[in-house]
Amino acid sequence: AHKLEAVGQLASGIAHEINTPMQYIGDNVRFLRDAFGDLMGLIGAYAALREAAERDRVLEQPRKQVEQAEAQADVEFLQEEVEPAIEQTLEGVDHVTGIVRALKEFAHPGDGEWQEADLRKALENALALGRNAYKLVADIETDYGELPPVRCKLAELNQVFLNLIVNAAHAIEEVVAGTEQRGTIRIRTRRDGAFAHVEIADTGCGIPHEIRERIFDPFFTTKGVGRGTGQGLAIAYQIVVKGHGGELRFDSEPGCGTTFHIRLPIAGPSAASEA
Image 1 (cartoon, rainbow, N blue to C red):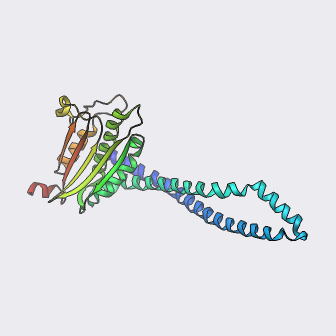
Image 2: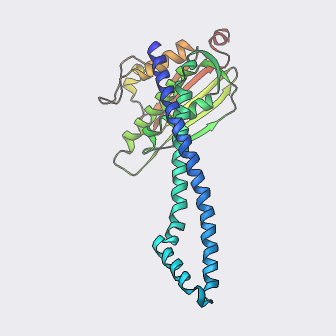
């Protein structure tokens, strides 16, 4: 727990340090976008003036100088390319800012306490942080049903959601590797009486029948060296079942995919024991 808190403090600090310069970059690029728009308007006015000057011999020499300057600057190229370049830069800034925001919320030290949390927001943050695992192999589909805030330890559930999303991406990668195909990760939430239900499904390789009883055992893994320690699902089970009084189970069909079901008491573990 102390190690997790220390990592959370470190990540939160790093996120803060990244966020400040990103704000400067974003503000400056937006200024350049607006300024470039004004500049293009001025160049348009110059073009109209140049056309009018074509009928005046006195202005012939200045007009030629303007035409030469336009050719050197390649104004037509700038008009076509600068604005898209600025927009792409702003998209990149927004993407990094979103990741930083997700990281701060994901790793904030205060999240180690019991609190009323928005599971949809937690899942979106997990998707933002896990994007590197699935972006080349899977598309994301979400179906968020109406859920009230759930009493939980959000930092722990963040680990569960991120672990299941990354596992889903790895399962899909085993199927689509070496092809141009992509799989799908589907995330669904709904209310089931006094419980919140979260489903994380994939179209990956599925879990073989002979190892299903061992899936939640500590240190059990089918992944290669460097891709897993075998602790992710075991920790997820401890967090959901032991820590939150919920349920964690799965349905799987080899060659078709796997769906993990998380069922959490909305009012917290004490409510689960009374239900």
